Image (tube, rainbow, N blue to C red; front, side, top):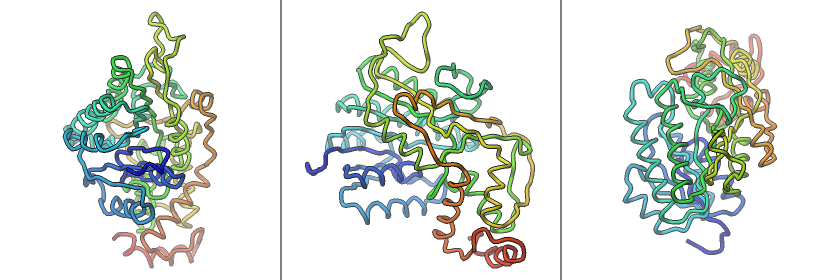
Length: 366
Protein backbone atom coordinates (compact mmCIF):
# COMPACT_ATOMS: atom_id res chain seq x y z
CA UNK A 1 0.00 0.00 0.00
CA UNK A 2 1.30 3.43 -0.85
CA UNK A 3 2.85 5.58 1.84
CA UNK A 4 1.50 8.87 0.46
CA UNK A 5 -1.77 8.36 2.34
CA UNK A 6 -1.76 9.38 5.98
CA UNK A 7 -4.26 6.75 7.12
CA UNK A 8 -5.31 3.29 5.99
CA UNK A 9 -8.76 2.13 7.06
CA UNK A 10 -10.46 -1.23 6.65
CA UNK A 11 -14.22 -1.03 6.08
CA UNK A 12 -16.13 -4.32 6.22
CA UNK A 13 -19.51 -4.45 4.54
CA UNK A 14 -18.21 -1.84 2.12
CA UNK A 15 -20.83 -2.62 -0.54
CA UNK A 16 -23.59 -2.08 2.01
CA UNK A 17 -25.52 1.11 2.60
CA UNK A 18 -23.50 2.59 5.48
CA UNK A 19 -20.21 0.99 4.40
CA UNK A 20 -20.41 2.56 0.95
CA UNK A 21 -21.08 6.04 2.29
CA UNK A 22 -18.32 5.75 4.90
CA UNK A 23 -15.75 4.56 2.35
CA UNK A 24 -16.72 7.41 0.02
CA UNK A 25 -16.29 9.97 2.79
CA UNK A 26 -12.88 8.60 3.82
CA UNK A 27 -11.65 8.38 0.24
CA UNK A 28 -12.77 11.93 -0.51
CA UNK A 29 -10.71 13.25 2.37
CA UNK A 30 -7.62 11.34 1.20
CA UNK A 31 -7.55 8.18 3.30
CA UNK A 32 -6.65 4.85 1.77
CA UNK A 33 -9.53 2.41 2.14
CA UNK A 34 -9.53 -1.36 1.90
CA UNK A 35 -13.04 -2.74 1.60
CA UNK A 36 -14.40 -6.22 2.31
CA UNK A 37 -17.82 -7.60 1.42
CA UNK A 38 -19.21 -11.05 0.68
CA UNK A 39 -21.88 -9.63 -1.69
CA UNK A 40 -24.61 -11.86 -0.29
CA UNK A 41 -28.10 -11.89 -1.79
CA UNK A 42 -30.13 -10.86 1.26
CA UNK A 43 -31.41 -8.04 -0.95
CA UNK A 44 -30.91 -7.17 -4.63
CA UNK A 45 -27.18 -7.58 -5.15
CA UNK A 46 -27.17 -5.22 -8.14
CA UNK A 47 -27.33 -2.17 -5.92
CA UNK A 48 -24.27 -3.48 -4.07
CA UNK A 49 -22.33 -3.75 -7.33
CA UNK A 50 -23.50 -0.28 -8.32
CA UNK A 51 -22.30 1.17 -5.01
CA UNK A 52 -18.93 -0.51 -5.49
CA UNK A 53 -18.67 0.87 -9.00
CA UNK A 54 -19.05 4.38 -7.60
CA UNK A 55 -15.93 3.74 -5.51
CA UNK A 56 -13.74 1.75 -7.90
CA UNK A 57 -14.21 4.09 -10.86
CA UNK A 58 -13.55 7.27 -8.92
CA UNK A 59 -10.83 6.40 -6.42
CA UNK A 60 -7.50 4.76 -7.21
CA UNK A 61 -6.74 4.47 -3.48
CA UNK A 62 -9.63 2.05 -2.92
CA UNK A 63 -9.01 -1.69 -2.85
CA UNK A 64 -11.83 -4.24 -2.70
CA UNK A 65 -11.72 -7.86 -1.58
CA UNK A 66 -14.70 -10.18 -1.94
CA UNK A 67 -14.36 -12.19 1.26
CA UNK A 68 -16.78 -13.85 3.64
CA UNK A 69 -15.72 -13.03 7.19
CA UNK A 70 -16.30 -16.64 8.18
CA UNK A 71 -13.12 -17.40 6.19
CA UNK A 72 -10.52 -16.53 8.81
CA UNK A 73 -7.58 -17.50 6.58
CA UNK A 74 -8.48 -15.07 3.78
CA UNK A 75 -9.27 -12.38 6.34
CA UNK A 76 -5.88 -12.82 8.00
CA UNK A 77 -4.24 -12.42 4.58
CA UNK A 78 -5.80 -8.98 4.19
CA UNK A 79 -4.52 -7.95 7.63
CA UNK A 80 -1.05 -9.32 6.88
CA UNK A 81 -0.77 -7.27 3.68
CA UNK A 82 -1.87 -4.00 5.28
CA UNK A 83 -1.24 -1.94 8.39
CA UNK A 84 -4.65 -0.59 9.35
CA UNK A 85 -4.87 2.52 11.50
CA UNK A 86 -8.52 1.76 12.13
CA UNK A 87 -11.05 -0.94 11.32
CA UNK A 88 -14.72 -0.06 10.92
CA UNK A 89 -16.72 -3.27 11.05
CA UNK A 90 -20.12 -2.81 9.40
CA UNK A 91 -20.56 -6.23 7.80
CA UNK A 92 -23.41 -8.22 9.31
CA UNK A 93 -26.50 -10.17 8.49
CA UNK A 94 -29.08 -7.44 8.87
CA UNK A 95 -32.82 -7.46 9.40
CA UNK A 96 -34.96 -8.28 12.42
CA UNK A 97 -37.69 -10.10 10.47
CA UNK A 98 -35.29 -12.22 8.41
CA UNK A 99 -33.79 -13.57 11.64
CA UNK A 100 -37.08 -15.30 12.42
CA UNK A 101 -36.74 -17.64 9.45
CA UNK A 102 -32.96 -17.76 8.95
CA UNK A 103 -31.36 -17.76 12.42
CA UNK A 104 -28.22 -19.62 11.34
CA UNK A 105 -27.17 -16.80 9.05
CA UNK A 106 -26.96 -14.45 12.05
CA UNK A 107 -24.73 -16.75 14.07
CA UNK A 108 -22.37 -17.32 11.15
CA UNK A 109 -22.09 -13.68 10.07
CA UNK A 110 -22.62 -11.72 13.27
CA UNK A 111 -20.92 -13.99 15.81
CA UNK A 112 -18.32 -16.09 13.94
CA UNK A 113 -17.50 -13.27 11.52
CA UNK A 114 -17.08 -10.77 14.35
CA UNK A 115 -14.85 -13.15 16.29
CA UNK A 116 -12.56 -13.38 13.26
CA UNK A 117 -12.41 -9.58 13.06
CA UNK A 118 -11.53 -9.33 16.75
CA UNK A 119 -8.78 -11.91 16.40
CA UNK A 120 -7.31 -10.21 13.36
CA UNK A 121 -7.36 -6.80 15.05
CA UNK A 122 -5.68 -7.96 18.23
CA UNK A 123 -2.94 -9.93 16.46
CA UNK A 124 -2.13 -7.05 14.08
CA UNK A 125 -2.20 -4.29 16.69
CA UNK A 126 -5.05 -2.22 15.23
CA UNK A 127 -5.32 1.16 16.96
CA UNK A 128 -9.13 1.28 17.03
CA UNK A 129 -11.96 -1.10 16.15
CA UNK A 130 -15.28 0.64 15.57
CA UNK A 131 -18.17 -1.75 15.08
CA UNK A 132 -21.86 -1.52 14.26
CA UNK A 133 -24.25 -2.36 17.01
CA UNK A 134 -27.95 -1.52 16.81
CA UNK A 135 -30.81 0.22 18.55
CA UNK A 136 -32.44 -3.22 18.58
CA UNK A 137 -30.33 -4.15 21.64
CA UNK A 138 -32.77 -2.14 23.78
CA UNK A 139 -35.35 -4.87 23.13
CA UNK A 140 -38.10 -4.88 25.73
CA UNK A 141 -36.94 -1.59 27.29
CA UNK A 142 -39.68 1.02 27.32
CA UNK A 143 -38.01 3.89 29.21
CA UNK A 144 -37.47 6.67 26.69
CA UNK A 145 -35.13 7.93 25.43
CA UNK A 146 -32.94 4.82 25.15
CA UNK A 147 -29.72 5.46 27.05
CA UNK A 148 -26.39 3.64 26.87
CA UNK A 149 -26.45 3.67 30.67
CA UNK A 150 -29.50 1.38 30.72
CA UNK A 151 -29.26 -2.37 31.07
CA UNK A 152 -29.99 -4.13 27.75
CA UNK A 153 -30.43 -7.78 28.70
CA UNK A 154 -33.86 -8.39 27.18
CA UNK A 155 -33.56 -8.64 23.37
CA UNK A 156 -36.71 -9.49 21.43
CA UNK A 157 -35.02 -10.88 18.28
CA UNK A 158 -32.01 -13.05 17.52
CA UNK A 159 -30.59 -10.18 15.46
CA UNK A 160 -30.65 -7.99 18.59
CA UNK A 161 -29.09 -10.78 20.63
CA UNK A 162 -26.18 -11.07 18.19
CA UNK A 163 -25.57 -7.31 18.36
CA UNK A 164 -25.55 -7.37 22.17
CA UNK A 165 -23.17 -10.35 21.92
CA UNK A 166 -20.86 -8.26 19.74
CA UNK A 167 -20.68 -5.62 22.46
CA UNK A 168 -19.82 -8.23 25.08
CA UNK A 169 -17.21 -9.87 22.85
CA UNK A 170 -15.56 -6.54 22.09
CA UNK A 171 -15.47 -5.62 25.78
CA UNK A 172 -13.72 -8.88 26.62
CA UNK A 173 -11.06 -8.17 24.00
CA UNK A 174 -10.61 -4.69 25.42
CA UNK A 175 -10.14 -6.22 28.87
CA UNK A 176 -7.91 -9.13 27.84
CA UNK A 177 -5.76 -7.59 25.13
CA UNK A 178 -6.15 -3.84 25.48
CA UNK A 179 -7.84 -3.61 22.05
CA UNK A 180 -9.65 -0.23 21.88
CA UNK A 181 -13.22 -0.92 20.74
CA UNK A 182 -16.20 1.36 20.23
CA UNK A 183 -19.69 0.06 19.48
CA UNK A 184 -22.20 2.31 17.72
CA UNK A 185 -25.90 1.65 18.17
CA UNK A 186 -27.41 2.86 14.90
CA UNK A 187 -31.00 4.12 14.86
CA UNK A 188 -33.05 3.59 11.63
CA UNK A 189 -30.65 4.89 9.00
CA UNK A 190 -32.10 6.17 5.70
CA UNK A 191 -30.99 8.12 2.66
CA UNK A 192 -29.69 7.76 -0.94
CA UNK A 193 -28.37 4.31 -1.83
CA UNK A 194 -30.41 2.90 1.06
CA UNK A 195 -31.33 -0.75 1.56
CA UNK A 196 -34.24 -2.07 -0.55
CA UNK A 197 -35.61 -3.96 2.47
CA UNK A 198 -36.04 -0.81 4.57
CA UNK A 199 -39.33 1.07 4.99
CA UNK A 200 -38.50 4.20 2.97
CA UNK A 201 -37.41 2.16 -0.04
CA UNK A 202 -40.38 -0.21 0.20
CA UNK A 203 -42.89 2.60 0.69
CA UNK A 204 -41.57 4.68 -2.21
CA UNK A 205 -41.60 1.72 -4.59
CA UNK A 206 -45.11 0.64 -3.58
CA UNK A 207 -46.64 4.12 -3.72
CA UNK A 208 -45.23 4.76 -7.19
CA UNK A 209 -46.60 1.41 -8.36
CA UNK A 210 -50.05 2.07 -6.88
CA UNK A 211 -49.63 -0.84 -4.49
CA UNK A 212 -50.55 -0.83 -0.77
CA UNK A 213 -47.91 -0.25 1.86
CA UNK A 214 -47.83 -2.38 5.01
CA UNK A 215 -48.14 -0.24 8.14
CA UNK A 216 -47.38 -2.31 11.22
CA UNK A 217 -48.75 -1.84 14.73
CA UNK A 218 -51.70 -0.14 13.01
CA UNK A 219 -49.53 2.94 12.48
CA UNK A 220 -48.72 3.38 16.16
CA UNK A 221 -44.97 3.31 15.56
CA UNK A 222 -42.22 5.82 16.22
CA UNK A 223 -38.71 5.67 14.86
CA UNK A 224 -35.60 7.75 15.42
CA UNK A 225 -34.94 8.17 11.68
CA UNK A 226 -31.32 9.19 11.10
CA UNK A 227 -30.06 10.54 7.78
CA UNK A 228 -27.05 8.75 6.33
CA UNK A 229 -24.76 11.82 6.18
CA UNK A 230 -25.36 12.43 9.89
CA UNK A 231 -24.51 8.81 10.65
CA UNK A 232 -21.27 9.02 8.68
CA UNK A 233 -20.25 12.24 10.42
CA UNK A 234 -20.66 10.51 13.76
CA UNK A 235 -18.73 7.41 12.69
CA UNK A 236 -15.80 9.47 11.42
CA UNK A 237 -15.60 11.52 14.60
CA UNK A 238 -15.65 8.42 16.78
CA UNK A 239 -13.16 6.56 14.60
CA UNK A 240 -10.46 9.17 15.20
CA UNK A 241 -10.61 8.90 19.01
CA UNK A 242 -9.92 5.43 20.44
CA UNK A 243 -11.51 4.94 23.87
CA UNK A 244 -9.46 4.87 27.05
CA UNK A 245 -10.08 3.44 30.48
CA UNK A 246 -12.63 5.35 32.54
CA UNK A 247 -11.07 5.83 36.00
CA UNK A 248 -14.49 6.64 37.47
CA UNK A 249 -15.95 3.24 36.57
CA UNK A 250 -16.84 1.12 39.57
CA UNK A 251 -17.49 -2.60 39.79
CA UNK A 252 -19.76 -1.98 42.76
CA UNK A 253 -22.06 0.17 40.62
CA UNK A 254 -21.20 -0.93 37.06
CA UNK A 255 -22.24 1.54 34.37
CA UNK A 256 -23.12 -0.27 31.09
CA UNK A 257 -22.19 2.84 29.10
CA UNK A 258 -18.51 3.01 30.09
CA UNK A 259 -15.75 0.73 31.36
CA UNK A 260 -12.39 0.32 33.06
CA UNK A 261 -11.32 -1.28 29.74
CA UNK A 262 -10.69 0.70 26.51
CA UNK A 263 -14.28 0.13 25.44
CA UNK A 264 -17.31 2.36 24.83
CA UNK A 265 -20.77 2.18 23.30
CA UNK A 266 -22.70 5.14 21.91
CA UNK A 267 -26.15 5.74 20.50
CA UNK A 268 -25.91 7.31 17.08
CA UNK A 269 -29.30 8.64 16.08
CA UNK A 270 -31.19 11.82 15.39
CA UNK A 271 -32.47 12.16 18.95
CA UNK A 272 -35.94 13.12 17.67
CA UNK A 273 -38.40 10.24 17.18
CA UNK A 274 -40.91 10.64 14.37
CA UNK A 275 -44.33 8.92 14.20
CA UNK A 276 -44.43 6.49 11.29
CA UNK A 277 -47.60 8.19 10.05
CA UNK A 278 -45.74 11.50 9.80
CA UNK A 279 -42.88 9.80 7.96
CA UNK A 280 -45.34 8.37 5.45
CA UNK A 281 -46.94 11.80 5.04
CA UNK A 282 -43.58 13.30 4.04
CA UNK A 283 -43.18 10.58 1.40
CA UNK A 284 -46.70 11.22 0.09
CA UNK A 285 -46.16 14.98 -0.03
CA UNK A 286 -42.85 14.61 -1.83
CA UNK A 287 -44.30 12.24 -4.43
CA UNK A 288 -47.61 14.05 -4.72
CA UNK A 289 -49.32 10.69 -4.31
CA UNK A 290 -51.40 9.21 -1.52
CA UNK A 291 -50.42 5.79 -0.21
CA UNK A 292 -52.89 2.92 0.00
CA UNK A 293 -52.31 1.70 3.55
CA UNK A 294 -52.71 -1.83 4.86
CA UNK A 295 -52.73 -1.68 8.65
CA UNK A 296 -51.27 -4.72 10.40
CA UNK A 297 -50.38 -5.78 13.97
CA UNK A 298 -46.87 -5.42 15.39
CA UNK A 299 -44.56 -8.06 13.94
CA UNK A 300 -42.71 -10.55 16.10
CA UNK A 301 -39.28 -9.25 17.05
CA UNK A 302 -40.23 -5.63 16.40
CA UNK A 303 -40.66 -2.80 18.90
CA UNK A 304 -43.24 0.02 18.78
CA UNK A 305 -40.81 2.90 19.34
CA UNK A 306 -37.15 3.90 19.30
CA UNK A 307 -35.68 7.14 20.65
CA UNK A 308 -31.94 7.71 21.00
CA UNK A 309 -30.41 9.55 23.93
CA UNK A 310 -27.35 11.00 22.17
CA UNK A 311 -26.05 13.21 24.98
CA UNK A 312 -22.91 11.12 25.47
CA UNK A 313 -22.05 11.37 21.78
CA UNK A 314 -22.72 15.11 21.88
CA UNK A 315 -20.51 15.57 24.92
CA UNK A 316 -17.58 13.48 23.73
CA UNK A 317 -17.61 14.32 20.01
CA UNK A 318 -19.65 17.51 19.62
CA UNK A 319 -22.13 15.51 17.57
CA UNK A 320 -25.49 17.04 16.70
CA UNK A 321 -27.26 15.64 13.60
CA UNK A 322 -28.94 18.46 11.66
CA UNK A 323 -31.05 16.63 9.06
CA UNK A 324 -34.83 16.33 9.53
CA UNK A 325 -37.01 13.82 7.69
CA UNK A 326 -38.53 16.72 5.74
CA UNK A 327 -35.05 17.33 4.33
CA UNK A 328 -33.78 13.77 4.11
CA UNK A 329 -36.76 11.97 2.58
CA UNK A 330 -36.88 14.16 -0.58
CA UNK A 331 -33.15 13.57 -1.07
CA UNK A 332 -33.73 9.83 -1.02
CA UNK A 333 -36.68 10.04 -3.38
CA UNK A 334 -34.73 12.18 -5.85
CA UNK A 335 -31.92 9.59 -5.78
CA UNK A 336 -34.49 6.80 -6.26
CA UNK A 337 -35.92 8.52 -9.32
CA UNK A 338 -32.49 9.07 -10.81
CA UNK A 339 -31.23 5.56 -10.00
CA UNK A 340 -34.19 3.80 -11.60
CA UNK A 341 -34.55 6.32 -14.45
CA UNK A 342 -38.09 7.25 -13.49
CA UNK A 343 -39.70 10.33 -14.98
CA UNK A 344 -41.68 11.98 -12.24
CA UNK A 345 -42.31 15.54 -11.14
CA UNK A 346 -41.77 15.62 -7.39
CA UNK A 347 -44.50 17.40 -5.42
CA UNK A 348 -46.96 16.77 -8.26
CA UNK A 349 -50.54 16.75 -7.00
CA UNK A 350 -54.06 16.03 -8.16
CA UNK A 351 -54.55 14.96 -11.78
CA UNK A 352 -50.87 15.52 -12.58
CA UNK A 353 -49.75 13.19 -9.82
CA UNK A 354 -52.28 10.52 -10.83
CA UNK A 355 -51.18 10.75 -14.48
CA UNK A 356 -47.57 10.34 -13.44
CA UNK A 357 -48.53 7.33 -11.36
CA UNK A 358 -50.19 5.63 -14.37
CA UNK A 359 -47.09 6.33 -16.43
CA UNK A 360 -44.78 4.72 -13.87
CA UNK A 361 -46.68 1.74 -12.50
CA UNK A 362 -44.89 -0.67 -14.79
CA UNK A 363 -41.51 1.05 -14.41
CA UNK A 364 -41.62 1.12 -10.62
CA UNK A 365 -42.50 -2.55 -10.44
CA UNK A 366 -39.33 -3.55 -12.28
